[in-house]
Image (tube, rainbow, N blue to C red; front, side, top):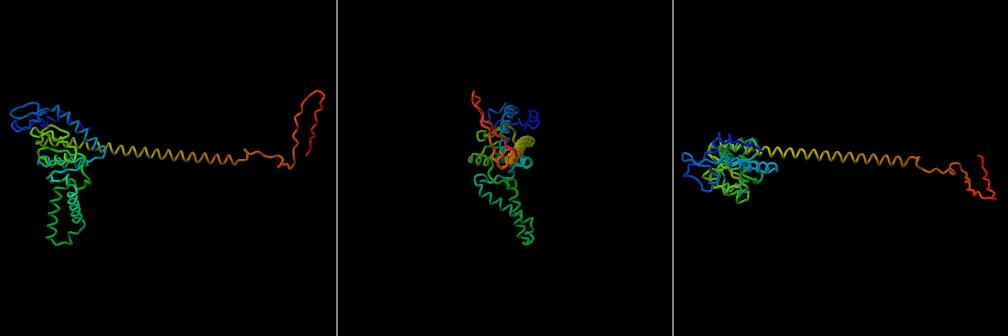
Length: 304
């Protein structure tokens, strides 16, 4: 599991919250104190709750589930795109389209249109169109690319979403909750933690803090995916070994049957009739009873 240290949290400025006049009372349990009019977040709780969130994300990835990274604020855009791409995940970093989750079928139509325009741009169909039409199509493609590039290859709804700033991404959080999709979010002192399933108390405005959390969550996803790959390889090796053992046992059984057939057809086990071989009838001696006064009949021997 991806580890995070207190030193990393302090260096990234995760403990700095918002001004005391801009806070949500529901965040009280995650606040350590106040200094110079700014709330200080309790990093002990941040460490503990981050480990829980990281374990949850890793387990999902190990089961082959999809985690969607969401961060549309300017400080988070690059970090979200880079870290999601690094771990092979999906992301939304420009604008959250209303109904992205709850109206998934319609969004898929836009994704299909984007793929179609991408194919037109690469297979030479643009060259067959008027210049004005090409400019119009290219403008449409860039617009779709900006909003849907991170989910272009996502074939179904995600199994969890990781959010930077649950206030900023309020629409995404509400859609996920409506569909029962777990939400993992970095929550600052002005956010409502009750809307999030896995709360990570911390600064959601500092670039270093955002990149720290995004990179660690991406590490958890990558480790889970690696665990899944190792498990699949082990299963394939086990299946191959079982198949080889079965084939070997079958071959041994077939060999044993062949040997048995050979031994059964061998003459050593048959009874040979001497009468048939010699063409005569043998006289077997009759056992004599040695009693007083009784003559024992003599058996004539026949010479061949």
